[in-house]
Length: 487
Image: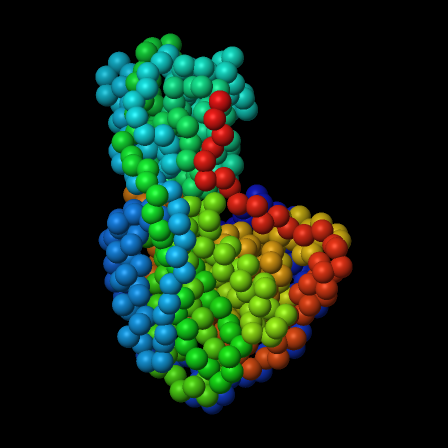
């Protein structure tokens, strides 16, 4: 099968080739007896059991009871590991507790899910269809229920900026609500969760499948509703620290809030890695390992990984941090649209392993080769480079962006399948043998980089930090607002 890169990665192959051509020498070998032993590392079946447990908590909306139960479970798992200490970073938020959506238009129309953070309540108005690209304004939408087609995108996550803009615009326009119709059936988009900005919208919104959309008739009076709760609360990130021979840290990060088996299964990888490294003698840990189970990725106005990245940025010049490594959406299978539904191709979903320095890129490439992880590209970023900016490329595709854009040397492994925000696919969305090999590759890279000098790991980051201090332009660290604007 030919490999077709997602649209946002096209055009970066030349950059990757150039980047790889300047890669540093092979990182130093691990001490004898310190490499990962396949016989003792978590098996694929154990990965599946752990992933089923995480998914079994249900929708882990930020600060929700389900999310809190997952965090407590993770805390118990890591706290019992030998040598591990665990603390929490608490973050106040105004949470959105999800509930069902309602749509009445010539009868009850099945709703796949309420659009996250849409306004609770019931509203009615004439149903109008506004084609993609037509702005939602007071002139065309005030008092009306706006029907939108799900944006035509290569993968579902690309639609987030459009969905977010439509929900904000609908609130400013005084619309009664927003209905977003997928080109896929109800059973595939049931529970769909995006945007994940965490911005509280001013109108109710719902997702519907293509079968439900066929029942709608623009021009009819329609009632839309969302049953959800809003309340102030406190959420927390877990930071588990495993001491090494030096206090200098390797920081391994993922988020805990999520939905389904894909978003976020990085928690399972961090557990497996924490258990592996905790079994080793301290001589096998040249540096201290910090495992960050971050909160608020589904409430990005106070993104837990951004808060952690800011702290590491402030500490970095003092020599206490070696690099950060983010793991997200592992083991994913490729599903693509065909004949009106999402169907498996039989291949793995394309993945990126982003690396911001030659030493990090070489460690990534070596690990992928050793573990036979296919359809994965070692990339310097996912956005076009801007000369003179520090760094030239800001995006690492996900929460790795926070660390890299703060000029902390960073690697990030991530994929973006159609199943990312579609929990209805369940276990079918994940190949747990592949997930295990990806996690083993991550462990190999961490082990190989353990004894490598900090300056070699950093490579260009050191010059970029000096350029930033001298006034060079930087990446934006502005987070989405917690509340959408009013009319």
